[in-house]
View (cartoon, rainbow, N blue to C red):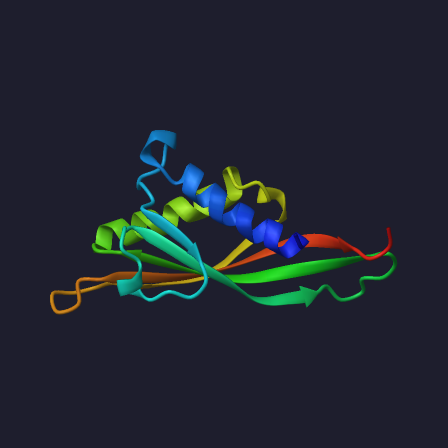
Length: 138
């Protein structure tokens, strides 16, 4: 399995494992999927879907290994406004504290779309980066 798949699979499994009230978080994650999913495709909310939109080479990398940066969008879904804010806070807390690659992660901007009476869904977008070294010479 490629190193990128290993990192992305670990992100998914770690999110599912840790974002739980029993582990000190404010929400119980209902579902997590790799790929782009819309609100109505995520049946067990609160939920997260994510995809890697870029596998970027860090400038100045030379030699037998390449420093790479995976750029990832996470989409967070909730049926309530308060829960979406809790979920965003939980994901940030998780990334910096419990995530397997916590020493190599950076959390960027996030945008929250609060639902209303006519559209009770709430959605957040979060951008993260994970650095890793891809070895080219064995």
